[in-house]
Length: 165
Image 1 (cartoon, one colour):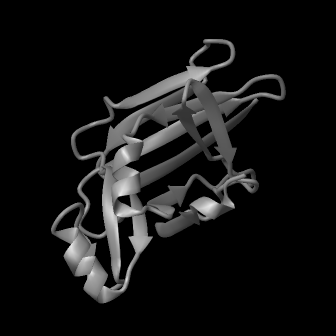
Image 2 (image 1 turned 180 degrees about the vertical axis):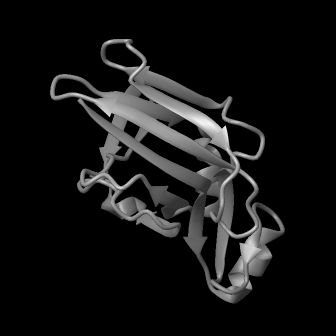
Image 3 (image 1 turned 90 degrees about the vertical axis):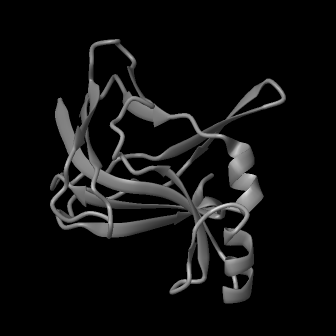
């Protein structure tokens, strides 16, 4: 059995825009970052806790956990983070998930998932999936390569939606 741990701070959806479009769209939908010409929709900044997150695993044995924490470092201006912990085996899986409103993603034209993280030093990475319900069907999109956990300093990770297969 392997243990995986990492900390995540300020999970957001983002879209790159020209500076003129960013300021116009930001007033209607989400805050703009004038330095990068992007609009972001914060999914979770973990400052209000972790109550919106769901834990699950194949054996219902508590193989995953999420704990609110106050980071040292993290996303600029953030006061919250979540420690995500997993135990995995060759025959099982564990997951942490959070529901979001996909219509908000569409309104801002989101094209990537952005978050700050500090890995727990593990050589293996952690998989990332997006799941959606569309006309009664469950759709799953998986990032082909795992997110690296061997980097133990805070870093910004941006994953374009086009990378999910």
